[in-house]
Length: 252
Image (tube, rainbow, N blue to C red; front, side, top):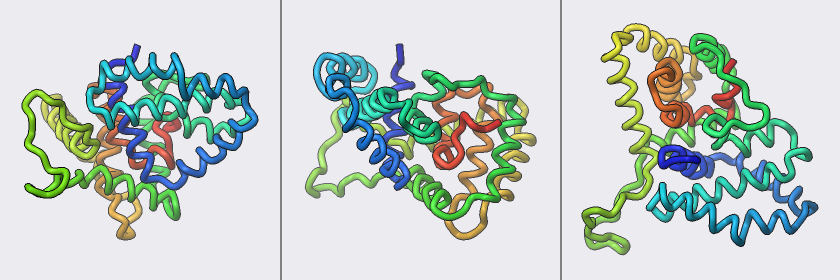
């Protein structure tokens, strides 16, 4: 039931999550719980028919092999998390399930509150951001602002572009593209002044301590402000630097 845009977001969320140490810590907890789980069920989610079926569904949406592998990995982690959900702390399970949370609502899903309420929650929370969560925000922000550099001509791994072959999934390029779309929509809808006010408020509220997240806070607030006219996958992408410390679904 998931289409290309949904699988692209799921793959992106997995790729970006590798910038967060907290992701590894939670998945270590998950690994420990799986050692005592029904091994037949664990095997079903890691090999065999179900995995092949999921791979086939993903491949129809994501021709790029690296993106498809990230999406499959994300789906497997979520499935295994569901298997031992009752043994996990709610926050741990929410972190595991997050790539699917809004596009395929989980058991505790609630409809998002009004836009202004979400933005107010974000603005109220931003000044308290510090320590390891802030460092993770900064790491993800950098990953979404620095696209990988292509190999130099003649260098190992360099190749001639082939017409008709899909480019690899590029979270940084998609982040920039989504932000340009948000700005365009704000202008077209006559909401530019209010849109900029939301940006400014978030940038003022964000920590100004040299970790480089101020502009990204403005982007996140702008995406939430335009969520009514923007595909949810793009809202989630633009909010992503902050999503582990304050999940989009908890903005209330």
